[in-house]
Image 1 (cartoon, helix red, strand yellow):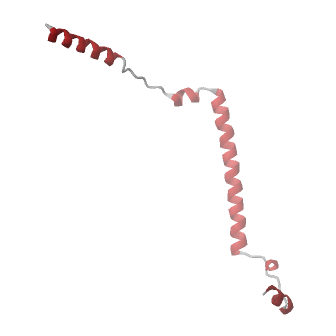
Image 2 (cartoon, helix red, strand yellow):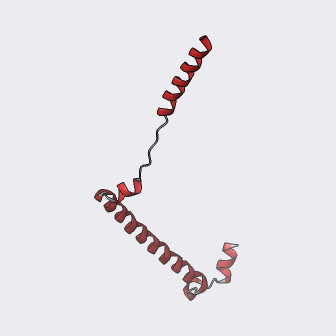
Length: 87
């Protein structure tokens, strides 16, 4: 009788534990897409990102231009007197 009571008590305890293990799926992407503030903030971030990307591309173009097409003015002539002072 005591074993039956313990077994019944264990089954009841397990059933409460099973009910406590509920979970749900939340589609946060859907929620965020339907919020106007989120869309406004995302648009602002996209614009800033594009501006930075353009700025980086222009800087790289300037660097490539300096490396592959150097201006003659950047090669200044050094006299022997000045060369001795530098060395």
